[in-house]
Length: 232
Image 1 (cartoon, one colour):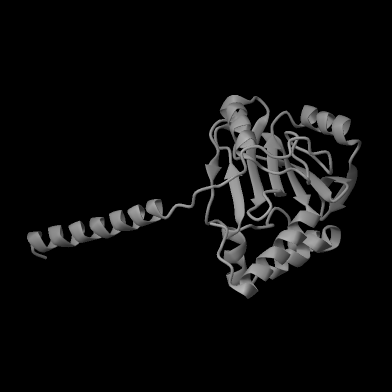
Image 2 (cartoon, rainbow, N blue to C red; image 1 turned 30 degrees about the vertical axis):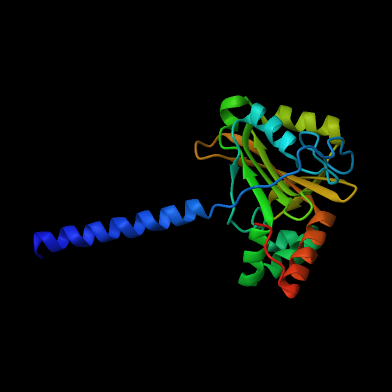
């Protein structure tokens, strides 16, 4: 192939890639939050004083970033319930299993992704000794919690702290795996001891705000049927 043609092709590819990156950046959604909302949530299982009746605000976002570092908004990623197998969800969390089945529809999955607020804190390990990962999902309609994922090392003390704050968990054995199960009001928390890639044990927690999740899915379906614009 002629050298000049190669240069033209490579230049064209670079321009296309650059154009795509610029398009994505320019169309990045802006997160609009109330300045300060309900900060005294008491219902359900709470993390960082955020329970099922909590309303996420810019004040709380700033407060969390002071503690865990900058949060990263995951704008186009869909909500998933892949932390546990469908058999597990069907047996122990039938409401969550039901909505996970709905997400088999790609159109609904896209709508759900666009109408939710997903924030992760990739620098949390630098700022705390225990926390490994933090990932929050809120409703884009009400700004209330849908799903929290929190994991941390020093799992024994982590569990002791949870037992102190939320009482002793129910123990569940499923397919030779042990799970910790807490339930309060309309929220459920499930814990499992896992290992990272260096075989270090850590406690993985998932908090489901079940009524908020059901309300959110109903809102998404209503907005879809009426043709209302996406949250973003």
